[in-house]
Image 1 (tube, rainbow, N blue to C red):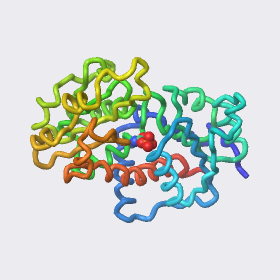
Image 2: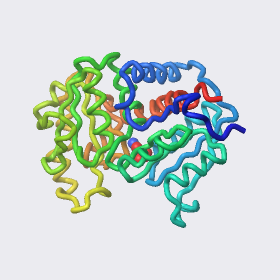
Image 3: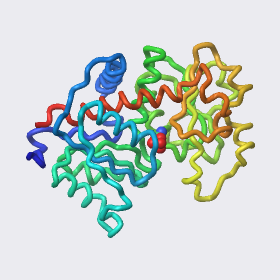
Length: 305
Ligand code: CP
């Protein structure tokens, strides 16, 4: 059994942020995801194992990584934080190094600490696939969002994208703002002032001023669990001032789409009746997430002996 690999023999293909990937590599992964969706046979990794370590709850990311693993014939080594030695004070590094030592070939990790992966990518010899790091980044969500946009428009160049809502707490916004600008989209942010984040380098606009010209309205979940000062709006107030209402959708241009990483706070970020609207790509995003994660796993495990 080959439990560890020398970094000098093969570069470990971590996937922790899209920042470290070239545009060519990102476009390649988008096209690969869409080929899987169109029925291209994926590579099979019989005998390879992945552990999915979720220190924060998840429906989409965890289950779609698990589905992608099944499509690629990867065996999941079940890992449950609550019954692991994490409860005895084991560090994240020690948990991961243990899984590497027993022969796991890659780790999918979601963790509440932004940048949790820095020590891991320095010291581990197996790939770390970031399933979300606190308010840091969510690169697999970002890749599936790119797949969804590219599937729709066949380009990013010149697309008008508005990222709307709780920007400061959103790892999805951080990942997408950066990569969409690199790919040539015009990206603006629409958010209450107290949830604005200058470090994303976006121009701040009112949603009502950009609705008619946007190709993509990308809504963000209001992250109640990260609001340490409590919520500053009632649900109704937020929906009325910043949410996608039935009235606002009517002002969107033909061909424009609505996205949301989900889970959705119904009737807060978006009217519940719009979640499955013709313009909504919210459930197709989840479908594309499986194919995007197949491409991520293939990149991580392809070529490993
Ligand atoms: N979009 C997303 O990350 O959803 P989960 O928290 O359910 O994984």
